Length: 385
Image (cartoon, rainbow, N blue to C red; front, side):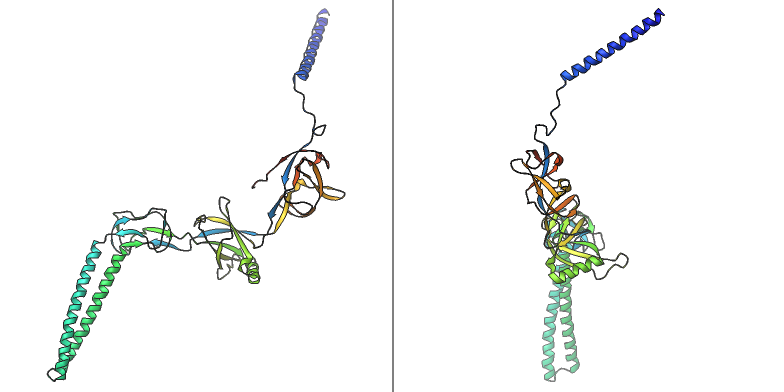
């Protein structure tokens, strides 16, 4: 019995010690822990987030996937045989029409020109001799000293000599053309790619491509639209002119190119499998942002922008009198304003009346604010601005 009572006393003592330690800990925590600030609105101005009302373009548009294409592209190929003597361009650079890009060995072709020049000179000299002989035969025939047969032979020789001169002239022209082919020039203005053949390589008209040039400015964007969209756009252009439609191009990095449409044409038939028709738009590309082969977004919209005031839906409140927002003026005083709402666009609401551009509407903390109350406000800038 004594052992049991002793054990109970020990348990009670340990319990009391634990309770005392807990109480001391709680007391010290209350003394050492900093007091929490008073709740917002209990003597302090409430803290809110605001956002400026901005005008935005809400014009309806349709987006298509476009493919950037070069209007002109050229594969450079040799027209004569020989070793490449010079490569006169920097790979990846802009070359102008007429620039010399490759030079193929020219000695053989210069020698061939000299040979053809000599043949032409010989043919001309022979023609002069035969012309003189023909004139003598004509004179003798008139005097009855030469037969008709001799005159016919002299005339035939004259015609053959003239033909020989023409043949020699043609051979000289061909030799000069071949010499011209030894200098491979840019047929168009554009950007040239990698040199596929370097100096010292033997080339011929049956050999590989030497390099490729693509035109960059102007450039073409191809995309397909449904037959319905095509007809709607065509009717609009017929009624209001070509300027009734505006296009925007969104590049892979998000850059927007607007209002630089140069010309447009459509394919001559609808794809019966997809009920779409191909459209080809031509654009100025002075900054070289449109690169052949790229895929971009093409937005088609009316020429005249539709501008509206948009606010986040979180800024809108409602009571028995209708919709309202609370704005914060330059003195950081809250002002309730009644608004008339339009359509919803994404997470934004169109406001047709009640607000002006530049007004700061509360988008967070609205439930803590009363009309005419002083507030602490921080301005939030929407993403993308």
